[in-house]
Figure 1 (tube, helix red, strand yellow):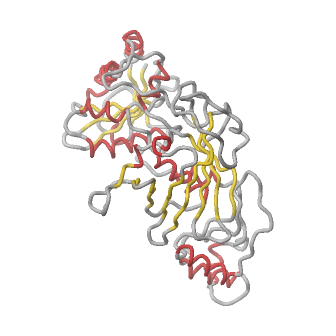
Figure 2 (tube, helix red, strand yellow):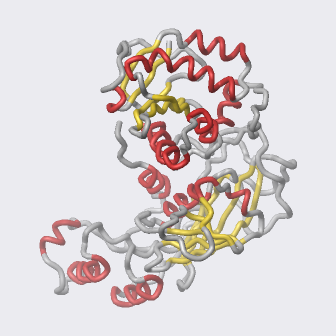
Length: 428
């Protein structure tokens, strides 16, 4: 049996039996998620829940989509070099199809990103688009990192290379991975995490990058130390930096590595050298141990960060990545005027340097300003009012609550921050 979990706009157009209470997909690939794309012509996009493998196909005739989908999945598997015996067993398991609502935001998020990229890349050939998207790193909303074609290779076993060649399997962060993805590190440099210290992996072993990210022009310095998978894209690294510092991810950003710029290309707004696409650029393809580069967030306030690759080590079983393993001082509030505006703000509120640093966790001081408090000047008024001085209204105090503490900082916020950055509303 094949369970197709469709978005509402697909279910409104597709006819087929509904899933029963005990119905489950019996194939190796499991459920497929699907949606309708109103391109010209209209297209159906199916994404496998276990590998994120995409299949683009004509939507019309929509009433027959559930009958056509198993054959189209089998055809795409053939083009990826899957063994005929595996395809035959999977096709037999898909002989009966049931329709159900979506139930996993990670898969819906990847499907939405594929739809966005696919509309820009579509040149009339849906088969070529399916194969191209299978070699694209999955986006920020997913249960793991990697590429769909590589995840397919890992799931079904020994696969003969397709015409374009299947890349080596790349691990999902936080899992044990048998395949090789990155070159061996050079000699040790800088501080290292106990999880990777002393490891000298063989050439081609999976890698963990230990990065120190320092916010420039701040004194005392504000910094974070993070662990990330070497196969992570720069777009995903941006999310990790945002979560580690406590930024809100509400402004533009850019990486500068050597003479190259990396971000989200926009032909209508890019000036100067072209911007390389961070969504398809892996960290281990542009950086190695000992290399430093820059990351800028919010081109108005101009928060510039220096990112240094302190250590590259092998994946230790049980190592959780991404992770923030150290740091110092709280993140400045958004829109406070950059480093100099933040320094002025600290003077006005009488900030005091923290006495001690907490090992192996984010260090810092003072809470982030509450949402909708009126920007930096409104926040300053709020702080004055909390000190018993004039400047803020009672309504604003009621909004933030009597227990608001501007000096509070929770070092365990990294995981929650990252989850909040990755979670967005989708059509489900």
